[in-house]
Image (cartoon, rainbow, N blue to C red; front, top):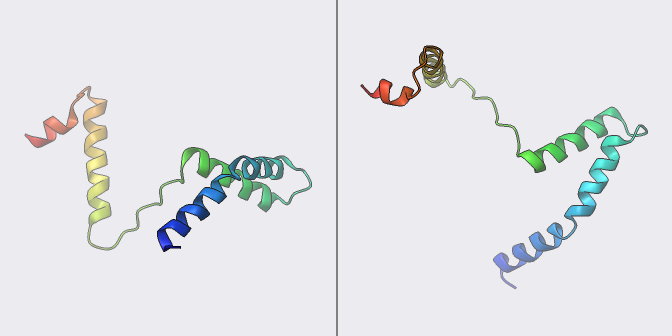
Length: 93
């Protein structure tokens, strides 16, 4: 069996247990007998699967990229507060 085929079979097998796994996570999340850490972990797993993982904060690498992103955000907010709908078009001028 090829590596790709084995991976597909494993993925298919894992997905066949999705409903059961979600039920277990919900049970743990709601259980007053579970530790707070287990309940939070289960809640996070449910949220990650339902809504996607939260984006990771951008780290400042020292090259000025983070400051540049913050500057762009401030410009967008500045124009948005003043009623400019198409900020991108204004910035390109």
